[in-house]
Length: 299
Image (cartoon, rainbow, N blue to C red; front, side, top):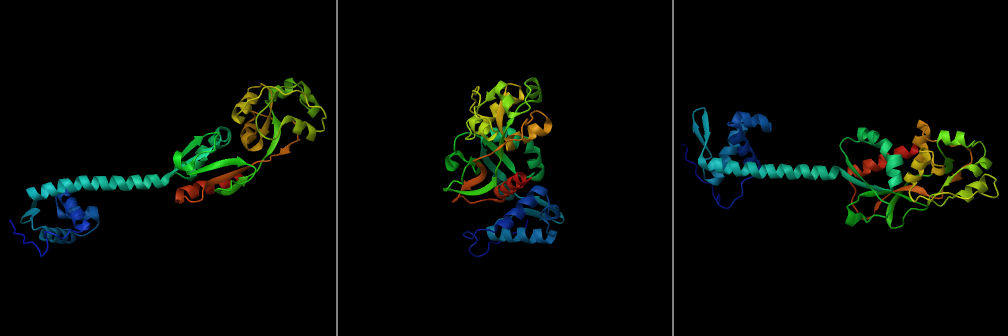
């Protein structure tokens, strides 16, 4: 057994983290050569790091008998504790990396269901490393207390207290199922007098649309549903005609679930905004989500 003499101030100096890492790898791998391959350094580099650590600690960590190498009891105790400590360290690093890739995005339930959900696969393909979490809510979220990073807001102007990027505008037009349009003979705006008019809570309403269509006396409106998603689903199910927001009905029209019987439309008074707190630091993942949303709204 080789005697190891402590260096000056060895009882006070803290050994370099690299030396501890090299020793732990050597003890775990059962030799200097294997440890060197794992760490990307030479066998002699491992040997030198271990020797310097032994000198600093004043303790033999390995027994050297020619080419044979074995860990001393003191080395075994140190290696076991280092292995546990490094495991916690690498786990913390992984958690930090994961947290940088997590983005919580808030939006209206109707936007989440009718616009974002059909594009989810495209988002994942374009951003495989981002853990996107959607919160669908009709209330204005508190970013700090609810842990939300950003939101898609539907409002006439950008919120003054938030950093805002305009995503896009839309138009409003009547939509219904093809069967409903055929069964009720919806060929001209005046034909809507025999239709059931589904009502929502957007600023654009049926009287405004009938006025734009040149009809002086709009018919009585039908059921009022507070959520655009529910209104559009009722229209898909043949329950009546809804005033559809173009962003939310585009996929339904493209697939034939809904049709727009008339060319008359209204310009929406509201727009879509990507918003986040002004005092909150951004991350590459948040910026990537914003860029993807901007691109989607430009299509």
